[in-house]
Length: 139
Image (cartoon, rainbow, N blue to C red; front, side):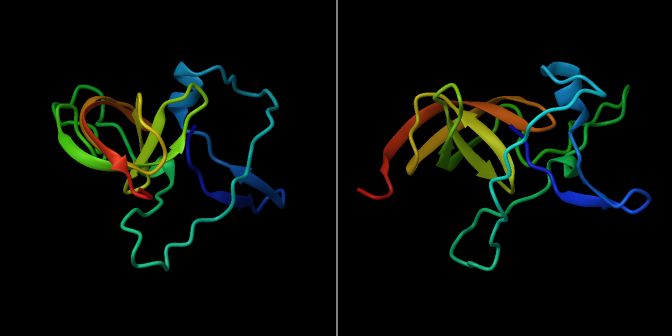
């Protein structure tokens, strides 16, 4: 799963959805093929009580090859932080967002506040291990 912004190709007057290159390199997608996509709607960032903001996936860029810097993601490997599970993934993992960047948390459910440690980051998401889980926010 990734987030993207819908744009229009001015030369062909057709809508475009940008797919992160990592999806082509590591995922089941192939350049030039046709795929169905799900459009889940727009994000309302006007609600000031919601601390999570959506950011297009293509905003997160990897460090140039050969550089010693870490990738420019909102979270870093080894970092510990508290997240709120907002959605469930296809394989049953919880999904939280940190500045629009997906953090996948196993054994978590929607509404739970989870203290996690980031294990691995990619251009579209991070994997985290739950350290401490709190009851759902609706309890």
